[in-house]
Image (cartoon, rainbow, N blue to C red; front, side, top):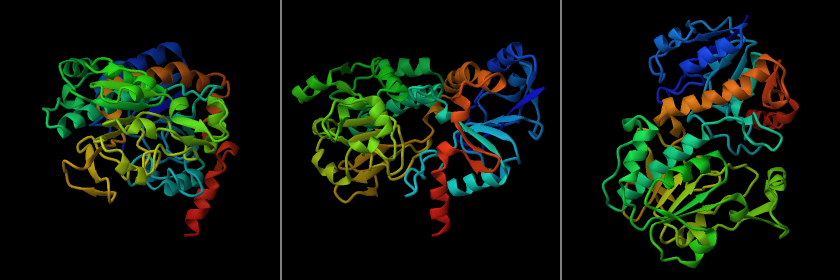
Length: 412
């Protein structure tokens, strides 16, 4: 009997779950050699009784589990020796210079987490790295991150221009109610730039298409700088270019992100909202630099859904919370200030899908059921082994570069 456990999330502001109750029934019907143990939780978006009704076992003790699933990073002291874990560890982006080390749960020491995982000989599989041969992710919360991040950014824009704001997504409670709320709003002269072409960008665009704002091409966005109420999506090939002036190639960019530069400047001059919805590699260029901010005279709101601290958006000097989603930045001196009409308003919530936890968890769990667990319980086609960061107390070959991060930190 293969035992799968779902751990209680440590973060009180994250009530998502990797599997919702309907998935328990689906998995038990599909695989006759498994049992599923749910660690009880008072803040999970589905209660323990709902899981119990679908055939799960409720138990505080997960020691008997062969595989333990979570969402965000697990507190190091809670990790059990020699177990197999699957969660978002936010460790694979870390470089020797510590870039991207701040991504993920605020205050979580990545060095401590990695060292504990290695010490306890834990097998760590990271959801973010479960990908196909074209490096496309099989599952993620990206769509709902895009939807809610866009909604929050539009709300911040309304607040900044002095218009009544919409109800928060977590108060509305469902995606359908969120759509009803946004369809009634007039967003005036919003000129919105959206970056990216993955799940997050698609979620952002999905929501924008339910508003009164018109979509325009990058060419028309540049041509008619005075047009009101428009949004424009820049895909990776449209905001980056190769240093050698060769034609953009996505696979080349994935392999050699350091051989590209940003060309987003020309679009930023007439934008009043930037919604970053792209995936960022620490070796790839930033969208813009701090010194460029003063040239973006019309820019009043940045919604950084990517939320890489000191990453592709230099204004993201810290992440924000669902409870307090925004902060304000002085463009000239590049420092955080109190709310001010001249300040740049930033939305940088790092766990956006938690505002609609039931909807986002159900979609995420669908991916686990269809694209992940069958390749753990049956035969792996390579997707699981490639996403495995540690095993038997060692970093696997694809992630050996993390050793440099650990050593560099130990020497400081």
